[in-house]
Structure formats: structure tokens, C-alpha cells
Length: 343
Image (cartoon, rainbow, N blue to C red; front, side):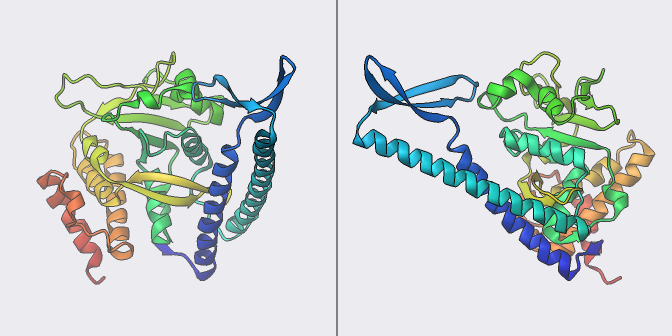
């Protein structure tokens, strides 16, 4: 683990604050989507508010005939939208300058392809609401909050794992652009070369970057669960993997991380204590590839050490971990205790 230096710590704080301002400005301008115009009907001007709903259909609503009140409404809308646009452009420019500073200080961590995928999921409302980041990319969230860099041997990756929450009824999510495109369609917005492989839970781009959609085993086994985010043809179907129910039941862990260009992004992973316990359990499975077992163990040890030394408020004996099987919990306990021993 490498702690941040004073300059890096200062600019990490600046990045978080400026990213928060950017997101607020973006949310404000999003509130002004559509238009407000006068439309003549039978010799009378009516004020129409036009916007697009979630399924992408254009909706129009009459706010009434031209009057002092509707004139005021339109004027306030036009002024508010222009102010929101100016604030957004200013916040965007500040964030781009911050990105240059972050690159100069070596703060960029999240691989660019992974960062673009995560931003796309966030933009359409899936991040933390049906999908969370697990696997190696989750470590970028943990180190961002802890204020240090994990060793490259445990963070280097050319793939991303997305945990599909099988408990959620995603009908309210899988609509509009998501229903039409599916997860594979969202990936193609990031990189047009993404294609689903023969393994229908996986997509790959021309550079060999992999995206896996995973979910826990159904319990009971005969329980029907939705495997895809949408009914779009050729969409990814989540593969069931033993042990993921612990990650599914874990609390979310949110962080602002920084990608290779120095630009911030929101990451929503799972509780790092559960991550470490699960990784250790995976490393102990006889069927696991020996090379991957060694990496799993190294990641479990690294995250346990990070939590114990930098995030001590996340106690390993906390009530949030009661969802772990007793054997898994007890096997992981020495990882956290060893991190606190001198030397």
C-alpha cells in the first residue's frame, strides 16, 4: 500500500468537491430538458411544455393561454435554463482543469474502459440500482476512500464484473433506452466493438476487454429469476455463481474514484469486509484455477489490511456481517487481526 502524499491528498479532496458541484449542476440542467414554447391554436397562443418520458416518447402539456401568468412562467423557465447551462459549463470546465492536475500528480487509477462503462451505467440509473461493481474494480473504490494506492499486483485488470441484484424487480428500470438497447447496447455506446461471446453472460471488445454479468444462485434452486436487464435481442444473461449471495446481501460502498485521464467517477461496490471474506473463500475452493487462487488471496489480504488500518470504523465484528456464514466469517477473521499486528 502506498499512502498519498500531501499534494495528492489535497487534490483528491478538491476533486471530490468539484465533482459534487458538477453533479449538482448536471442534475439542475437535466431538470430543464425539453422546451417551453408558444403554440397558436384557433387564434390563441398556448404555452406548451415539451419533454421526453422514460420510454423516449415526446410528451406535451398545455400550461394555458397566453396571459401575464404564463408569460411569467415562460420567462422564469428561459432564465433558469440559461443560468443552469452556464453553471454546468463552468463546472465542467473546472472539472477538466482538475483532471489535468490529477494526471500530473499520478492520481488516475481506474482503467479508462471500465470507467466509461461505470459512467454509462450511472447515467442511465443502473449503478447501485440493480448493478454494483465487484471484482478487481471494487478495490479502486476502497482505496479512494482510504486515501492510498493498492499494489498494482492486486489492481491490474482487463475486465469488469457487474453484480446483478436478482432480488430486485427491475421492471421499473428496464424501460426506455435500457429496454431498447439492453446491457449490450449500453456497452456499445462505450465501445462499438463490444459483442456478446458464446458465453451469454460475457461481452468482449476488440482489445479483449471483458465484461461479465453475474448473479447468485437462485434459492431455492427452482425459483425463477430474471437473468437479463431487458428483453433486447442478444442481451447479456447473468450467470449464477455460488457464494455471490453474500455480496448481494452486503451493504453498498460508494466512493469517488479517479480514472486514468484524471477525471472523477462514482463507484458503487459492496462492503469491503464482505469483499475480503468472499475473496478468501473463493481462494480456498479446490476447483479454482491455481493462478487465480493466489490473486484472490492477495486481494483478500490487501483489502483486509486497508480496512483494518485505514477504515477502522468498519469493524470486522460489526452487525453488518451477520449475513456471512459462520465458517466464512471465522476463516476471514485472521486476515483482519493480522493487519493490526506489529510487523
